[in-house]
Length: 201
Image (cartoon, rainbow, N blue to C red):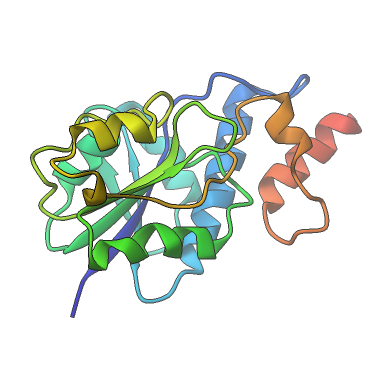
């Protein structure tokens, strides 16, 4: 049986909505992303952080959810920290309304290809990257905030070694925030924080 794990990578945030504390903003995004992961079936789920951000992970993880401390907030560092798995996906922890199906589409190509990436809608960067383990040696260092699918494809021995799956937005600016659909269930922590910012006191 193939063992799979999906890891939410909690990294720095460079933007927060006006009136929202950036520390609370990052925690709310991470909490909603982790809550989504906890609902997934047929995969293990985990969180990865640098040692300095361990408290953030401890505040948002579910019981029995693994936390990996990594030297830098990159997918490469997360892949290196994993053992006992055949496939792994690392996703950015700033996509609170991410559908579970999008994660499934990131993992599915690994049955026939060694690596898959999901672009960040509106770019630059990626929503996530998935790979068979051990990671193929040709996979370059991936920065979820900057790396583009074309750069990963250029490093592959054959273009078909990389699957590019559907994009989804990360909340990194006003345009991403405006795309949130209040009618969609989920993203409760982010919703509550935005509601408090809109109606202070």
